[in-house]
Length: 251
Image 1 (cartoon, rainbow, N blue to C red):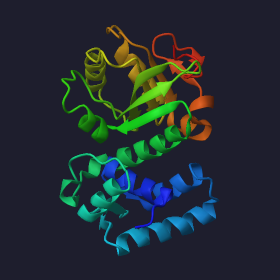
Image 2: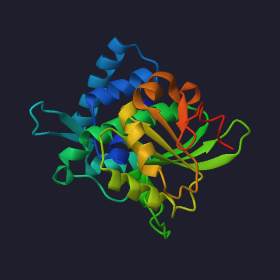
Image 3: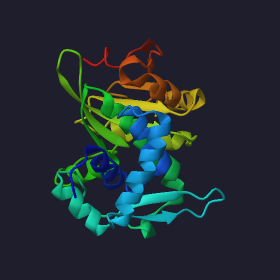
């Protein structure tokens, strides 16, 4: 297959997150590659049809009231991705491993990762599946985040940052458990939370009260992040509730 960066990145989405959908591919082409929305719709359809017709990908449908068509890499697709220099974790996804409850969260993290990848300060972005694979030979204590990144601040210093994407209201005990696990992660410099609502941000902040939090945590809303990107979005500090731009506070 002739190397095409956009096709490679679509295949990479499937490898790193298990699957993707047409909307997310359109999002990639619009936000990352700068196509118009009309062009992104047409090109997304063409690319996904091309991949499936060559047996690099296949599709399955969710059983929800509003059915979703999801695309994933076949065994041939994984081989092609590796041959083209793409990054693929050891375990290939098959539809029998699909968990419906993970769908919206997975597709949201995909979109967040696309915006993160636009930033020149994000050196490496590894979704949870990839992060677990890369750390397989290390004894990592504590929670592996939804994604883990190497981020450079404006002075060029590198930091390891954990990313948590919260789109639903979790029990306070669950969130407390997250903070207890983060306290064990000696390799993380910061944790960034992207939440789908202000209410979820308040729940996260409340869960951290009266608990030992050894590293900085910053929070913002999903809307703020997707609209303004990493450099311009406003974040709040977990303890002080002050507003700031997260890259300016990375030191």
